[in-house]
Length: 115
Length: 111
Image (tube, rainbow over all chains, first blue to last red; front, top):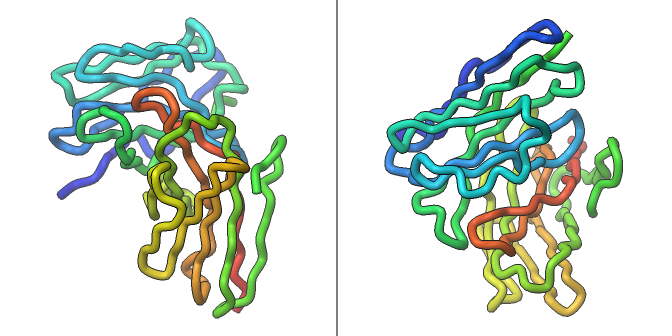
């Protein structure tokens, strides 16, 4: 079946603009995760959804970052008033149940460049 | 090994040789570990996992070893091929369903 998909694959924006990144998890997966990966670095956890609720938002770096998930499926990560340090690859992953432990399946990522 | 700062440690091997990628994890309570492979421009892909009640698990051409005494995880790739060139991340599960990722190691395979 289809894997995790993300759109857009690349996004170039100007400093101060808002951006929305989209994640379509694997059908039936109840848990969804957002990560950020800066150039040449590991994955930084941002937020986790179980269904439509987000029990763990601890990784969001500032109040400019927010995320929502609707219908237990698609999720959007919104970054307001983007800054140059927001430039990174944003990765989404999903798991069947969210119960520990569970392999996370990743999408291809959205590369965000803030000029 | 683990990366510090902006530069990934790099392992360079000759095609056909075996590769060993190491990872030190942080939490002795971690009960599940995963190795991911990330090729350029792609998201991480699951390679192999191991639970804390095991010390070795084998897949196709890959073996993961877990040493809980020293909190060390390794990934062994047999007969390394050019297609194995990628960045490899270890991840540990230690808090419900959250994974903590290591910094990654870049594997370069020389033909």
